[in-house]
Length: 212
Image (cartoon, rainbow, N blue to C red; front, side, top):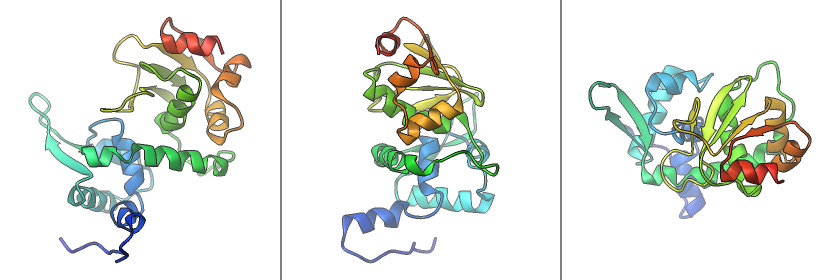
């Protein structure tokens, strides 16, 4: 495999960009923060990426020790990609980048693809800010369902579909409210008080949001 291009600068920021500065890399990290994913799942949730580009970026990430490819044990017998501990340390970087980019989100364009779980990072941050950062929170949008683990230090930060067990809270809202929270136009507590978010459940997270 040919060597990757480098900025050739003795600077930690430049070294970091040597590893993750290429197009699509950080968005692949975003997808893998949900846990192990098959190549086909990654391709489906990264609209616009070519198969060749995705394969190249995954190989680059393996070389940089950001991700590994492994085979699931029977009866799965399929290959998945997952973040290494080094790759997972990019979670706060991606979180900060999403917070910084919130102002640029604007209104959804007709050409914009959307997946429900793309709101997982900003909602996880909003849950922590609302004092509801413990446990598992299930989120339902018109675009689909996902669950977040806003306080997770290890393992997946979110996952597609309903929570695997009884969640600490269930939220029902729309993508517009998610976008407003992402842009900083509304806090999650304000959205709950305004009736734009429906909260159910008996866990600590649900109580914290209802008491907002």
